[in-house]
Image (cartoon, rainbow, N blue to C red; front, top):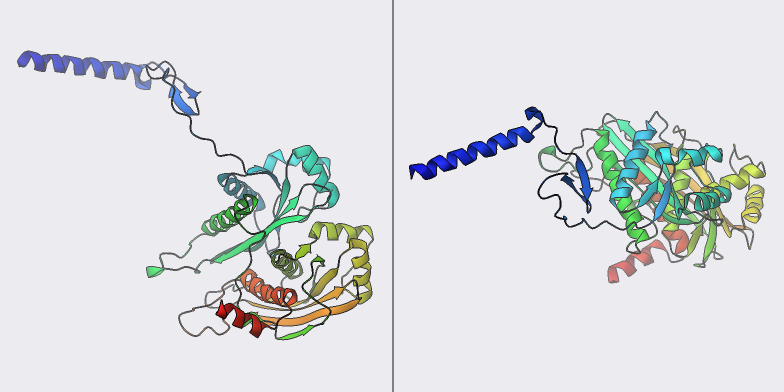
Length: 405
C-alpha cells in the first residue's frame, strides 16, 4: 500500500516538473499557435496532429459597401466609431461589409465627399470596382449623451446604373424607452443605444436580403397622428408610381429637419409595394447638374421641370415648421409639416396635407403610448400620410376593415 502511494507521489512530482518546464516561467517558450481546420492548437503537442472539427463558416448573404455615416443631428458626433460599430453588426448578421479604411481608396479615387446619397455613376463604379451588390447609405438622425438618445436611418442602393433603393430602415431609442422593473432597463450610456439600434437595423437588412423580411422597416400605424388637414384628388389612384422626394423647406429650429423628414418619406414610401422611390442621391445629382436651387421652397413650375428630368410620376415636397427632440426628461418631441404631391400626367396637385403632433398626444396614464424621440414621432406621422396617399379609402374605412380581419 505504501509502495503504491510512493509510486503515485513520484508520478505526480514528475508530471508537475514536466508542466513547469513547458511553461514560460520554466525558461522554454510556449509552442506557437497554429490554425488547424478552423480551430487553434499548440504546435508540437501530442494532440496537434489530431484534426479538430472545423467550425462551420456562416455564408455571406451579400457583399455591400458601407459608406461613412452623415451627421443630421444638428450637433457634433464622432462618426468613425459609429461606422465601425455598424460594420461589426452587419458582419455579425453574415453580411460582407466593405467600409472604413478598405473603402477610402475608392472614395478618394472618385472624389466622393458627400456620402449621404449615391448617384448613378458612383453606384455603377462601386459595383464594378468593389464587386459589391449594393451601397449602404447611413445618417445619424439623433444623438445625445446626457440623457442618452440615439437614432439612425439607412438605405441600401443597388450598385449599378439604376441606383435603385433595395431596402430602407431606421430606428431611434431614448434612454428610458424600456425602463422595466426598478428602472433596470434604463440605458446609462449612448453606446448601449447605438449597439441596439445598429443591431436591429442590421438584422432587418439581413432578413430582407435573405428574402425573409420586407423591403423597408415600416413604422407602426397610429391613428393619433393622422393628418389634421388633407386634400386628395380623385385622379390619385393605387397605380404603381415612380416617386421623387425633394428636400423640404425648413422653417424649424433644427438645421437638418428638411433632410430628416424627406428621408422618412423615402423610407415609408419604399415600404408600400406599389411605389418605386428614386434614390435621393440621384435626385440631388440632377438638381446640381441643372443648377436648380430651392432655398425658398419649390414652386409648381420647378416641380414640373423636375418631373420631366427624372421621368417620375409624382414629386413630393413640403415645408417643415417644427421638429424638436425631447432634450430633457419629462418633455415630449414635436413635429409639424405640410406636404404636397404633384402628378406628371395630369400636371396637377393630387395630394396636400398638414400634420402636427407631440409624443405625448392622448397619453393619460403611466406614459402608455408615449413616443419619446422626434425621429420616431416623424416616422409615425409620415406613415399616416403615406398610407393615405397609397389607399384611396378614407382612414375610417381602413380601420373598420382591419377590425373585421
